[in-house]
Image (tube, rainbow, N blue to C red; front, side, top):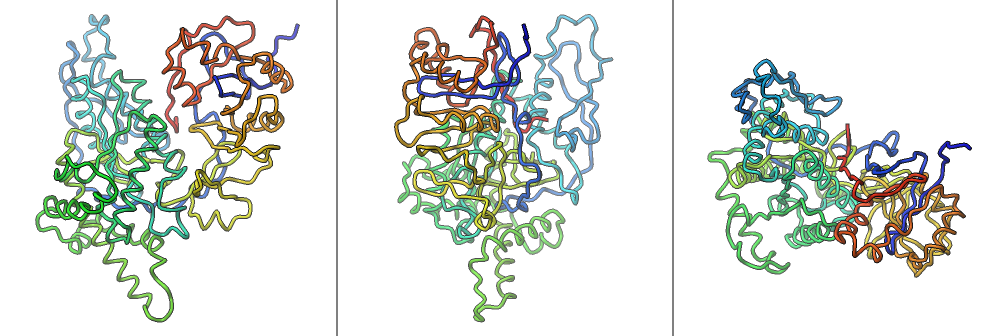
Amino acid sequence: MDDTPKLGSDIVSLGTDMVLMKSDTIYTESEVLPVNADAFPMESDPVHMVSDGLPMESDVNPMESNTLPVKSDHPHMGSYTPHMEADPFNKDQGIFHMELDKSTIDPQASEYKYDDDPLLKAFKVMEVIGRYRSVVPATARDHTSDGNIMFLSKMCNQIRDKQPIQMILPAFPFKSPNRENKVLGSLPDKGEEISLAHLSGLCAAIGDVYEYGAKLTIVSDGLVYNDILGVSDRDVWEYSHALREMVVENKYDHIEFARLRNLVHIHEDVSLDGETYEKLAPEFRQELIKRYTPEGFDAAVKIKSDENICTTYRGYIKFLTKDLEHLHVDDGTKSRKSHKKHLGDVAKSMIERGAAFAEAILKNFPGYIRLSIHPSNGLTKISINVLPRTPTPVTPWHSALCYTVDGGFMYLWREIFDADPEMELVHKNGRPWCYRFKSELYNWSSPVTVDPIYPCGMMITPVNSTSISEIDKEKVQALAHENSPIVLRGITNTHDHELIAQKAESMDASHLSASDFDIEEEAEDSDSQELEELIRVGWVPFDGPNEEKDANNTKQSTTSSPSK
């Protein structure tokens, strides 16, 4: 008898959800479909936007490299110096490397669990963060090694206190004011959803190597800059409020938010709504400038004397040219020269506001690991990519997202997608959501919505009530071979296991797992929250042929994306 596994598809019933996945590999016993982004195809030659995120403070003046002894909690190690590569974050691999001088370790202490040492745990956490880290700009001197010593020290303090790794990220201000050519509107869209999932994945991956996990606090810099960019305070409120709803809806429990009022500590007990926020926003902004602007700070002087600030200033000019292009109309009333001068003045104002905002974060979150969306020399902050698989920094509030049939993502200006006849605009709840490459696989006999799942797979939901017997099996199977798993949500008759078996057979499915993941039947014996989580994130147990399934032996492991 031929025991060679046959290529086919699996259907799994999760209550009202059906999951179909390509099965060209057989997993047995406790194995599950690994959620590893590298296992799924992405775009072959993406064209990404030039970095143009909203401003943050530039790096401080580089200091000379120092190698500092580190105190270990290990009883037989004492103080020692980690031997690190000149660049402990390999730029090609993005992985943190560390050599330990094992000659200082007492060989008789073999029973001691070295993994319990805070410093070694901190190194593991740094390795995870390294998979998200952006490279140091070619024009900057690399001070990653010096910065890592500081970050490891902060992590060790948190680990000793048995606290989650606390990270702070200034980001998600508001959508670009250029909503005709650059972004899809004033509210978060699929780009923000993917970005938040990506950042939640960072925290979850840290939880795989450190038992107390991680928390990421996102502090919006929207009110810091919006008035000088022509964005209303109400737009900032609506954007930030929608982000919070998105986090709650998707249960990204690792992510928290802070507002500008939490930095200036005024009106913190006031319940906010859109109207109240608009009323108090100018006061929050002025208090930031008054309290935290460094004494004697002069943006014009800093631009001339500080190489990093000068580079930041030029970067601002570059993205402002696109952000504010709608303000310049070549009708003869305003010269191009005067428009460039206006951009320069705006950029200088951003430099000043950014200095105050950076100081406020430092004072309010001194023990946190400082993350940044902007490239840096690695000395005072860890620069990360907030969108997956982006070789250059790009943010969802300065771009639109497009997905491909095979699971790839592209981030470009909306005008580029609008001009491409191969693209089509997708709406969700009546508003623009993202773009996608046109494909007949999305056109079913009855209308459906298709939404990509991070980090892989697709969610398909019929617009009208549809029985499992009525689904378009050829297109489901074709999609599953392009981007697995396929989750069919809102399908009726999913508790009819005989009908499911017939449908699976008609699709040449090689395996069937229907009864084992019926939520109603399993509710008494399983953790309902765990089953709900199973549906939410798309983890799909895979049953090998003729194997006894043991849910207690099934281990799910979070893989950060991109994994390196």
